Length: 311
Image (cartoon, rainbow, N blue to C red; front, top):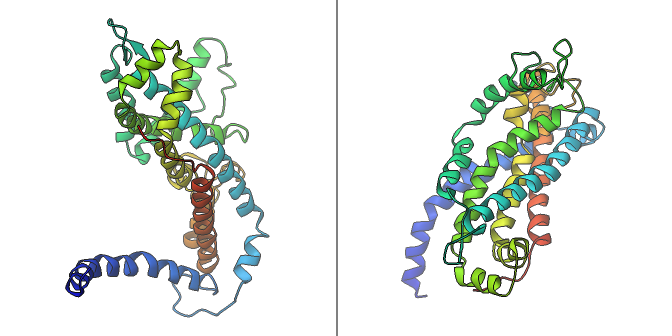
């Protein structure tokens, strides 16, 4: 590259790199700096306390409990969402047989793709309102109403879906999975459509069934898309702030009930930052969340790395 070309490229890169440094990197640096102080948020004066906030953090039973909840979300949300999305995408693209004996999607697959994608167009705030109505702890709630009608639940003793410690996390997971399956179905469908039909038809001639076609052809060729989906869903699982704060009982502010049984790191952080005024302490939580998310992304990409298959 000639000298003039370096200047040309640098001129185009200067503005976006500067904006990235100012609006992305600099706030991270500020957050780390504040995490080493006793900053109270609104106060313009604060004292340097070193690593005291981090020491207190790992003695905080509520925050440790929130980390455990995020880990549960991290395990189950990506696995369930990706498995369902892969299954539906495979059925909509290669689950049927054409009259000529070739491979195609099940009947009505284009219509199903639109239906499955509907939840993705709803914001999380709308989802919270919708599922609060579904999970209502009386016969007015859709779920309790149906279970009461078929005799599985006593109308005098309805299920407290969002107030039962053993149920609240699973109820929240269901919302995230319901919201995300349609998007990843479309993502995987687009990747499947790039796979030549000749490969499926050759496997069909050799006597391969649907399960063999999926595990021996579809999944290996979609591995890059699955890897990307896993990282994004992992980041979603490390957040969960909107749904938890909107759908669960308040523990002072920002949800997390009952008795902190649905707390996640984001709700504990926001409560300390805005409600208790412990902003330096909350910044330490933010730094821990950032590090955990980065570690998650790197580990996921390394653990799922495999040779690229060309076709």
